[in-house]
Length: 214
Image (cartoon, rainbow, N blue to C red):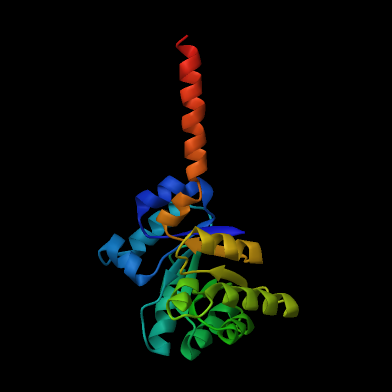
């Protein structure tokens, strides 16, 4: 299972680089980190991690989207061009796949969107868990449906769980057998922690200190 950090913050990436397989970004994250110069930030991220780095297009029309996608792909061989799960986005995905360019289809909210992405040769498809939960739909169930469809038909597209809102989401999609997950730093940090671990250490240290004082 691949673990990606969902951020464009260089300090966060450096902190967790030994525990992640790559990085995902989006225009919001890039805007906060780059001040408009997303290419430099993307290059710096690629220098820190050895795995895939998703960089998303912002263009709206098919022609502009393709042009931007090709420019993004030039940043590094590590870059995975992130595209929306729309008709135009999927058309661009098909074109990039034929050129051997990695893609990550984002804003996926249904099994059939994921199926179309797989048929277009997407490297990753990113179903959003938390945003479905927000509208009283089961985001984890969506991940399971897509994993089952891909397994049934042997698609190579990897399911990348996104919009993860807590460690329970993380554990749930991992138990399903999702290929990859992307999480913000605050959730990744919680994966190293548990209140019983903290409490146990306090007890051990107190006991040791009491003995060593005798």
